[in-house]
Amino acid sequence: MPCSPRAGFTLIELSVVLIMISLGLGMALPRLSTPPTKRTEWVAQQFVRDIELARTRAQSTRKRVRMAFDVTNNRYVSYLDHDRNAAFGESAAEMAAFLGSRWTRLNGEVRFGRGSTSAAPGDDGSGAVTFAGSRLNFDSRGIPLPLGSTGYIYIHHINAPDAVAAIRVRPSGAADYALFRGGVWQ
Image 1 (cartoon, helix red, strand yellow):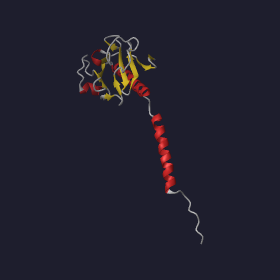
Image 2: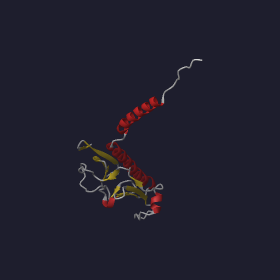
Image 3: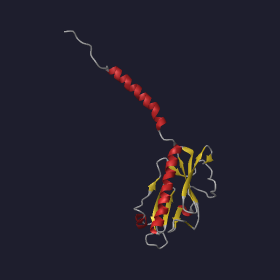
Image 4: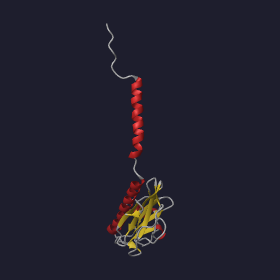
């Protein structure tokens, strides 16, 4: 009986194909990573949502709410004045009263700070958080205290000092953000 040729691939052919695929992925994957400006923008959007949640919680419970920013450890938390004594001890009970709040750590490479940028337009404060004592307080109507005050929270990406966002809280309590792109605030 004549021997028929074998069907399939040799080990060398499979190895060459796998090496080519690996090289292709090695060149393509770095381009698929998220740029620092986008990561900073995502954290800014999360900040706006959390500030709006704190404001809404103050309105719905008709109690004061405080957001505390720990710039050194890159985290923040919200408290609810559950006993209506108009004073915050920043206790575990006040933290739990705010929807079981806990410390929220900033996304890995995003930190509090201004990076290599100047202040956002309209900001005359200094530092990463311009609220007094790094605390944002809302009254029972969701308006920042002292009444009608405003402030900024700056965040930046550690690998791109110009990837900066400024989260602004307006006198009405509404929050928005601006990004530093191409040397200007947008």
